[in-house]
Amino acid sequence: MKQTVDSAPAELTHAIERRRLAQRVCDAHRGLDDSTLLAFVSGSVVDGTADARSDVDLSVVVDELPAAAVLESACRRAGGSPWLWAQADDSGQQRVVAFHVDDVEVQIAYASRAVLQDQVDELLVRHNPDTPLHKLAEGILKAEPLFGGGALAGLQAQLADFPQGLAEAMARHHSQPATPWKALAQIVHRDAALWCRDLQVQAGYRLLGLLAAVNRRYYCTFQNKRLRQLAGSFHQAPPQLADRLEALLAAAPAEAARALHTLEGEVLALVAAAFPSLDLAPLHAARARFIAA
Image (cartoon, rainbow, N blue to C red):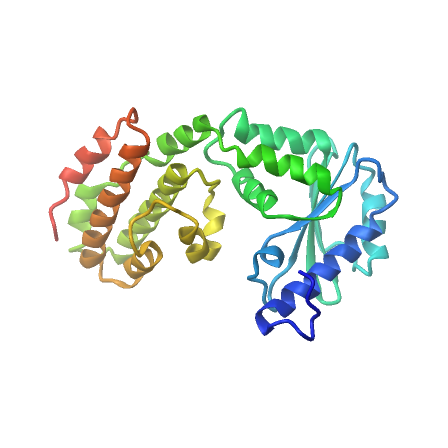
């Protein structure tokens, strides 16, 4: 991102300004342990979606995290306010904090190298299908280095090799439980619009999780913050996926149920092709109990 703020298109201005701010915060952490320091920026700053409401997502990693007071002092050197909030694990080797710099909120995820590698292993080795660490993995893959580019490239190479075991675990996880089609067919005719909508939303989350498995994409529901960006990243998906999911939320309950039933069938066909050994019989049995409203 080499353009100047003055010459950049309006949609990139916020990203350029926040990228510079991120570098300033990173530079303020120099001297903690430069031999092992890794710092990178991710989120909307690097994917071109930053706007006036966007914060700055940073990660700072060293072999061993210093005390909280040392880290907060580094943030203050960058012009930061006192921490707005902070969360840490019992070991003190993982901490997330937020503060303001020039009226922009900055969030830093601090971790020791051992903690970060363990988080990566939770996905690549232990194949956890349902954890916010999927969001971390997605962020690392598109992150830009601020310091320690070689270490970041190594992490990105690890995460780019999406394991078959994780894809299968995600497919199993997001295929359960089956959408309660019999109940849904009944309540669309009753005074249960809120309940119908909840069932439709939960089914939508599962369908996105299944498609993430098919496409070998890290996924957690937080990524629905930008539904069209997520849906657009799937190479294998039903046509007009984002439009159809959004239409469900606006349609009357009976109409939405019929559309969801059709969409689920298309997703399950893709899942069956990608994971032929996965038992989808319970899902098809549930679908057979749906009587078009």
